[in-house]
Image (cartoon, rainbow, N blue to C red; front, top):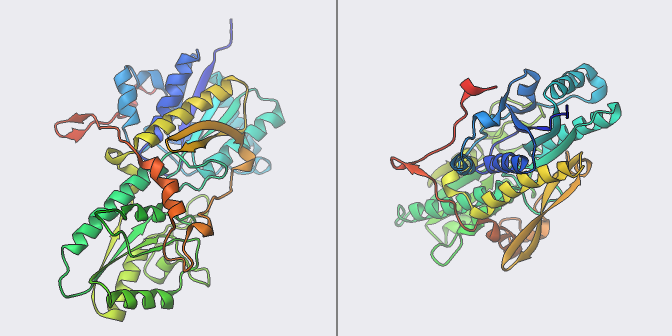
Length: 416
């Protein structure tokens, strides 16, 4: 009897508006390539360790389900932030994982995630090679932060940038309608721990019908409170409404996050990442006391990664494409690799998939080039905007029911 050809796929890290399009790409292409079953890990590798998984054929029955899945935000299978130990630290844990994979006749393990998720692919593929296991391990890129190395950009970033650009325009329009003969300062806080790709996307708001934000601060450049205050005072002499975009991860010269100057929690995740929040609130309060005018803080928060109604068509199509490319790569014998997106042309925009050794990607961060920021570090340049613009084009109309978007929801009663 021929051995079954099964795939297992999981989702990890912070979700995006298009992470499920990659899952749909894995599922559809696996069936087209003749794989027998596609299992989904519930809450990533952490759920797999608890033997929590689902046969995706019990969840996706029709072509319409694929289309719904592509339009559903967050992680359909559930996500996790679980750091695998080094192999020598807990060999028994790896033995348990591979025992589960062997019992399920898994030929291919696919993980959809960001930097930390690629660390998981690296460790599992290393263990498989070390012990002579036959499974293949492939990574599918996902992160709104756009900080994965070697790929031109990551699925999820384009839709988040589209939402941020549109929301910035709306915040500016709102602020302009509220001021008259008085100053008001609005601070928009955008996600981005060490990389400022998302914060830079606020510059997309600058267009014929919008002047865009006045200042943009990315975490790649040290934040100077005195210079910031001087810039604000100068702007107050020129205009009534001032809008400033700041990354949640901007730091002072001594290494402290600006948000740490205010009240912030002590939560640290499994990968040692401190929770960042309150940067805009702290700066709004600081300016209110220093310049004696009305201030307000706008934190876009999880809306940046869950606004599927604002998803970019380019982003959804590419997310689906990289999911399918991972199945193809594994079917052709690749392992220990991550699928990447290569930019083929800008006008008209075209992209293709490539594949790189995950050891060159895991635990590396791609930052915004300093040359893509102005001299003072208070705005992004045309190079940055030209890089992002193709990624926000088009849309997928939500499938509306009773005036609201319909999503595909996991049926936990049909887990096996």
